[in-house]
Length: 161
Image 1 (cartoon, rainbow, N blue to C red):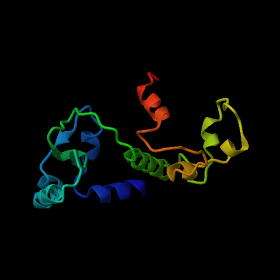
Image 2 (tube, one colour):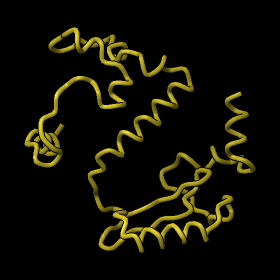
Image 3 (cartoon, rainbow, N blue to C red):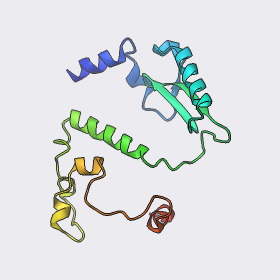
C-alpha cells in the first residue's frame, strides 16, 4: 500500500529514487516535472511586489531541482539562522517515522527514545514529556526572553559542541 501511494504521488516519474538522494541535486525544467513555469514566475513576481522577505528559494519536484533563486546579496552558500523552519523539518520527519511504524505517535514519551542512557537530573516532569509536547513547543520548560537578546542562546550558537 505504501508503494502504491508513493507511485501515485510521483505520477509518471518512476525514477525518483534514482535521482535523490545524491551529493548534488539533479536539475530539470519545471514542465518536465509537471509544473507550469508561469506559476513559478507569478510567485516570484508576487514575492518581489509584496516585498516578502525571502532571501532564497529552491523548488524540488520528483527529486529534481526545478527552480533556484536568491535575492541580492544572498547566494547559495550564504548562512542563515533558520529559526522555526527546523520545527517544520522535524515534524515532517516525525510524520515519516510514524508512517514507517518507527514511532507510536505524538503521545509517545521522549524518554522511550533514550532507554540506553542515564538521564541527567531525573524528574517526573521529564518522564512525561511527549513528542507532541516538543512538536508544539509545550514541554513545560520555561524560556525567558526573546531569541536574539537571550545570552544563553548566543552561547549555544558560539559553542564548539
